[in-house]
Length: 432
Image 1 (cartoon, helix red, strand yellow):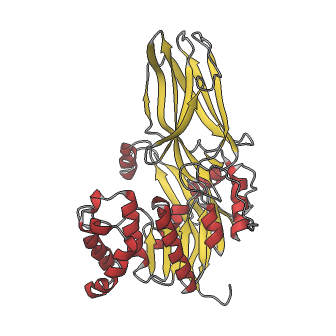
Image 2 (cartoon, rainbow, N blue to C red):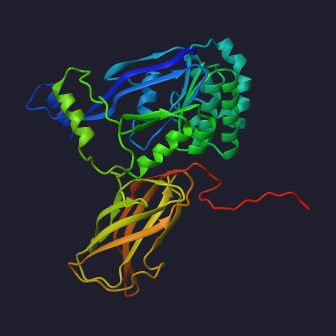
Image 3 (tube, one colour):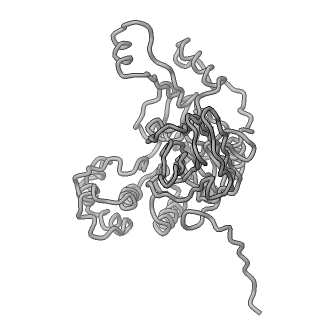
């Protein structure tokens, strides 16, 4: 890479957030009232990235690894706590669906608004408008307020604007997963054109097949630390090791005293060495029921028995529930269901359907329930809900339900059409 010019240089970047238990603690600390009230969270720990002009580079990692944070710092949406970022070239970024759109404006008005924000004159936008509208292909909806758009229309228009302003560097964060399969194909075809034109592309995706197909190099992040960089195959293999807790973190000075602050340095050491809280739990879940039976613990493990919220497509995983009985209950039913992020219920089962448990329970008992199955869902983000119900005579009772309690990430290097993979065996041979 020595003969190529740097498009993006990220040098020893840290991003640290102060976390408060309640808003009043922030105010008390600001006025110097009492002891420090905050805890420190390291979103990024001394990350270094060099991205060269003309490369297509991917960033992969589990939820909370710092992928979106590093992209926002590169694009200037966030400032780093320490370190520096240098960018050589005009950036077009598609980080968040509809970011920069005015919900009351129609599609065309938003094209002009975004174009103006990017430094183009009205005349220049006039010249680009036909290409933008042709690529977006949302018909007469361009004359309607964008607040009436579906998520698919949003991403079509946003991406059409992003790739038609002649960027030298294109940055995309998962947004393509919203469009339909035909639009995604059109976008990736544009990626190919950009690569041939020598433009730089940086994108984050859970779609490992796209990472493998398009990326010249890949960076692997985990819990704010850069674990490695290399070919797509090398980093995808390492990512799969991370998911099952079998990747050895390299020993290096992740927690340098960049800020010359002993408290920050101590917190960094704690974050690197201690066991953090379980990720993927939804603090705003919907909970209700009589509580005659109560779900007191729930989590998921992979095929190796390691607790996780990320599962490799095609592998086995187990959902665990611990249920306490606060009353005598005739034949309780233990259940789970899976929704996509749009709220559509995709699949699920319960102990009655599976004829796994049809016995009565008594007050004071605790039951451990496990559901083990193969992951056949497409790569993406899903939500798990849990329940304990049953029949008291002819009356259906809800003892405890937890809706959207746990996030689950399915990691896939091959996605087919629809919600799940039929595992088809395909053969092609010469006709006789």
